Length: 69
Image 1 (cartoon, helix red, strand yellow):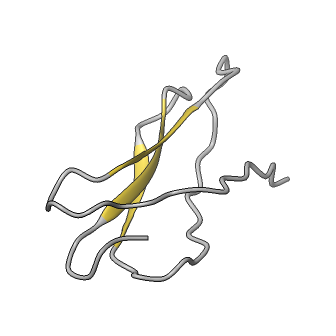
Image 2: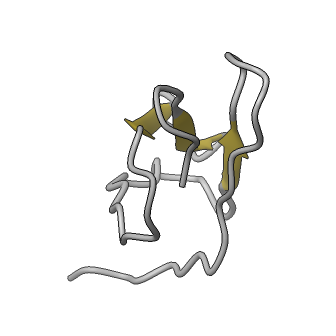
Image 3: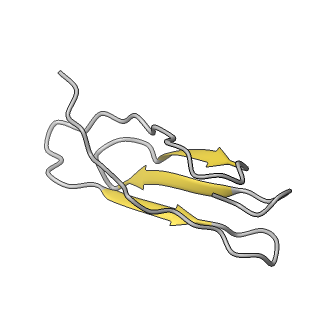
């Protein structure tokens, strides 16, 4: 969730593939999926939330990891 006119990004890195992320500028709490596929030898992934523009706060919470088959 971001302040009006600003963005928050949720991303995944260090999983054996290229970093992937989703930017959102929504001002309400919504589910935003970020899909990724682990590499052959990857056993972990780093999930992060960041906001690098603007002066207001941005929020990311209630992350879930769901295996798709």
